[in-house]
Image (cartoon, rainbow, N blue to C red; front, side, top):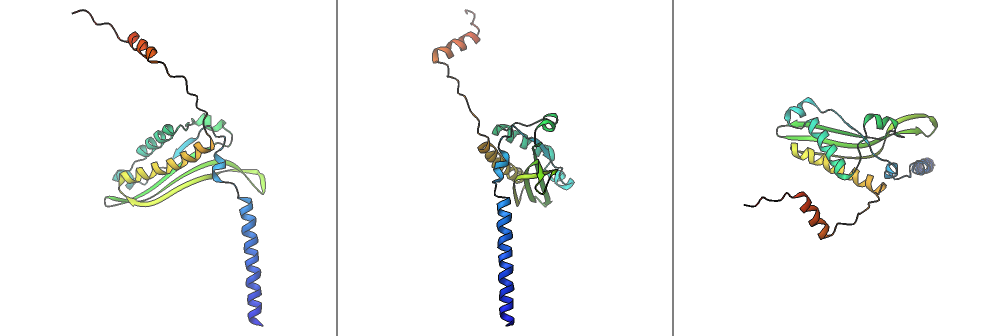
Length: 194
């Protein structure tokens, strides 16, 4: 008798867990990349590093430069603060690199989160800034490896961003060889006769 009560209780608990999981998955069935659709750019926030990481050779200035360069090379527009504040949902790319040096190596975590203003499901009047698309990595490497890990995570973000926002590239007709030669001759000064 006691065994059947435990079995029944376990079965009911299992059904409740399945029902809750199903309801939760139905509420979050969107692909995180869907939150990237329609974005024209992002505002960049790079978190400050531990002072000991800065002293050991991984600096915030390097990470800001690496991040800005990678995003621009990918064709992702960086918003100014004024543009960001005027953009619907205020999308910002939050980069957090936590690097703890030990000897010549660093134990690190790299997190790249797209944060946007979202509404709370149970009360749409409540809005907050939340991560809608994230990628991250942990590991142990030297200072160059930490920067490479960040570039890898930025590449993953850029791939998602560009797949959600494919650009319509226009390819102007390439000039003919005659046109190129004429343009080159127009820019090349004549040599004086020797």
